[in-house]
Image (cartoon, rainbow, N blue to C red):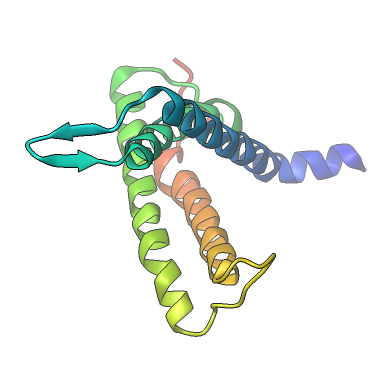
Length: 155
């Protein structure tokens, strides 16, 4: 019975496991970057340490997610440059799209009344809802548009 469930939900289970690990990568690299990167100033513009750390941790998380999704979630085995580059470009693009959805969706949900506090944090219901939407969209984009040729080409 467990084998049947694993066979049926293997891809989703692996997606969730690596999603959690991607979050860990994001949080750990953010913490590390905030410890080692100074505040950056140029041309009279100061870039906040947290902004720089957040962007760099996002990049680390996306690269980690791409590799793990490619290899172990959607099992796209080809490393031919034309295929890998296309997958990577589509992966990053889709993550940028869902990032914008999260960035815009959170205040929109709050405006529409999903501003309830959870664990004493205002707007947490909206944050949870938008996160669920983003996770689902990331999975759909990866499955339907990015790694759609899984297991067909094994170079």
